[in-house]
Length: 131
Image (cartoon, rainbow, N blue to C red):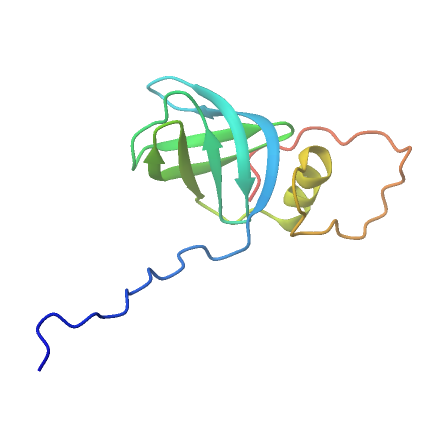
């Protein structure tokens, strides 16, 4: 029996339920205690990462508001300068596709779905509280 034998480190299980896509978009967390402005850093159908100077504490419920959409969420982790949120309901893929098309950065993990929009068509009106 080896008392000081080296063991392999146990890796933490992956908690994300879907792939994240890097984006760069202005966003605001709307909360009763005060709004926090920042930028979306990455997003998936189930959550997002927001960079902000004063991130809210873990467990806070909020509305994450960006460009044409907003969604109910709660903070699941926080670090200096950023926090991670989980959406109360998964976002529709079309919402992600619109954001990725508008504000993508870095390698794209999700591709725009095929739809009937023409390149010269009129912009869509804002859609609030996606779900």
